[in-house]
Image (cartoon, rainbow, N blue to C red; front, top):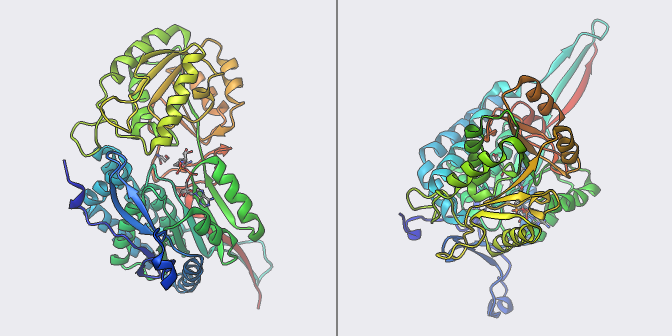
Length: 494
Ligand SMILES: NC(=O)c1ccc[n+]([C@@H]2O[C@H](COP(=O)([O-])OP(=O)(O)OC[C@H]3O[C@@H](n4cnc5c(N)ncnc54)[C@H](O)[C@@H]3O)[C@@H](O)[C@H]2O)c1
Ligand SMILES: N[C@@H](CC=O)C(=O)O
């Protein structure tokens, strides 16, 4: 176990290579005011203790940041790609060398078990490693269609100043999978981390500076969402917004970006079905269910949301899952052997509680869990609900908590038709041993990512993203760099 005071937290924003506080209350009359709203306090979700504070930047500071990022962009784009990639490689090495400290900061502010936090830091670093490969940038072409002596060139160029707005559930990886391709492409970036988890972002930025990423190329800004989001979305200098978060905020930001016609990547909410087919290896499916559902206490966008279990294997799957879920250990993320940390805040806990109450009122059976943990404030006991139906809120909505509703099905075509009615389309999982069924389901599920006989799908080398209300654009893989590039055609004639 570690004490909160062991970790020195960077408590300023990074603007143009300089660590800054807010200029909000710098006038005499403002400093006399009892409430200092120039800071935002961050709490440890495991203890509710304040662990530090970050500045609430003003609109004027944001305007300065955008101008600095624009100036930095025009210099960074001229740095040869190989050199940009070498700088990213140094940042990657610095993160790997400092992974323990970064993971401890992450657990401190986010709550997930330390082993998962270490896994996230490695995962976050892997995006930087992936985009540090110059080959990922290869795009340009000379087309053979012009009359001699003309040449038709198609080149890729960086978009310009980019903004990233990110959530609290993966405070490191959601940032690096935007920043790494942007910087590799030659863009500059302004990151607004979630107010609950700014310290991981600031620690990553500190290492970026040390690795030689020039001033203004990577900026991390903290403050009120409306102030930061408002200046970023209104500014014509910001050419792209990459957002990860809820579908509601994604819709709002997309509308806010419309007047300046920014390029958008939207990684939004999910509601992943996990289907256990009649020919599934049930033990493997139970393991996949645990991996997919209970990681980060269920607070993962690609988490299995509801389980659809064929009638013929329903009881076997339910019994085995309940037996395994009862063994999950609750506790602080920094305690050994802990599998389930706290939920991020009281609102998240209340929502999960309401979803379970709704399911029970509609006839679901609580096979384990079903309530807050009696021992600690912000935990929900891992829960399995049997006889869940598609009318229940916990099946229709993204739960974002450690609750597994099990819906019984017998008609595959009917199930697929009902899943097509879902708004979300991020990920789906199924377990089957039959090639025909595997091909059919893989094609027919309307999602961006499918896990077949696995509950874990993420990797820096593959395109991550959803369809329908789960957003647009892809992060990771060869596709992830496209989000930060524009195509230009040049005709050369003598
Ligand atoms: N598709 C993906 O890749 C992916 C990954 C992680 C999380 N998510 C989704 O994120 C959600 C959980 O994250 P959350 O609760 O932090 O989401 P959220 O939408 O409330 O917040 C995300 C970010 O947006 C900011 N924000 C909120 N209102 C804003 C505004 N008006 N202007 C500018 N910024 C604003 C927040 O401060 C935060 O930084 C879930 O729905 C989850 O599925 C999706
Ligand atoms: N955990 C996700 C991100 C969304 O929460 C991932 O696997 O990248």
